[in-house]
Image (cartoon, rainbow, N blue to C red; front, top):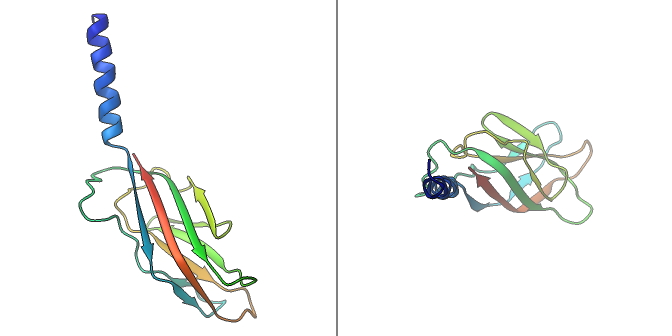
Length: 130
């Protein structure tokens, strides 16, 4: 292969890889978390219509949610294949890497025993895929 052909092939590979890479974000309504022995679940968080995900897979997911001061909750971000415990109200994870990017996600929340009900608001994800 000539140097020019090799360079053209490399450029085409980079362009096709970039075309298959992207991100989407969604906000969903808040959730009232009222029990410690049962989780409360957000509505499904699906990719916006019109994004051609095909067989794209997740790479990194960033999350955000808000609780009143001094009212922490136990939180998870779930894909149909697996749930990941969240370390705080904001962060990112690669624990869902390789799972289909067109599957809906959702948050799950639970209280600690004896904790009073809490409204969790500002639910958002930013999904990066390849």
